[in-house]
Image (cartoon, rainbow, N blue to C red):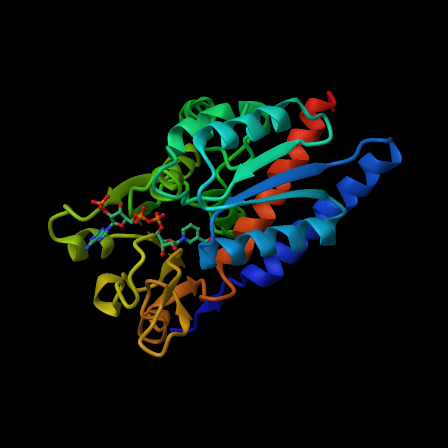
Length: 284
Ligand code: NAP
């Protein structure tokens, strides 16, 4: 079957161009857009993500405030920094890169960020708003996937959509956004019985498991759209997703690659949330 590649690089470039123009228009009105990114410790993957976020800010004219804190930072110190950033009018969005070192409680930290500046949309207030369907920010990865589907004119209304994974960051909000678009949604996880029987029904299959080669061709319906959220290293230490791309692509109507799929969209949506925060805080 001839399949389309859902090109996250190309789609995120279009999204970023739109954001850049809006940021410039706000600047003309005397309004700056700023994002604070906090990194605690030396997690190598987190360092790469933070560097990419800083680069995206620079590209789009968003001021980035970077805080690199040592591994032994206390919860008090971190909370005190977040409280200061909550009060800083130059900072429209605050992001604390996860995972945090084990001695820091993630939910305490997330709950300290005021919901208006919570551009990751992890605060319980924002999570609740997503549930209701009345939201300001959407979590970046699921939002990026919805943007990709929209760009490709893939309408999920009435379709069978299956999400593998139920994390608070990806799986659960992904299911909710698909539901808001009137899809029939099934969420699978490690306790799901006969996963293949469920995934084989999917018109749209989203995999957010974190295991290379997890989704094989026999799990995918002919003509399905497959979205690969996974970011893994294969046996050759090359970046790859959850999906056995070569074999699965042959059965698909459209599929995201890794790299160059969901990843670039996630950062673009973070920039979108920062812009939204700046507009709201300035009553736009
Ligand atoms: P996570 O919190 O580890 O969640 C993984 C999910 O997969 C869990 O819900 C787990 O089920 C489920 N799972 C594990 N084994 C399974 C099995 N055998 N059958 C069915 N489900 C199974 O991971 P995450 O944070 O959601 O991230 C998932 C992947 O996406 C990772 O590779 C991560 O790096 C990647 N990611 C990419 C981006 C991006 O921008 N591209 C952003 C975020 C995450 P249980 O709940 O039952 O344990």
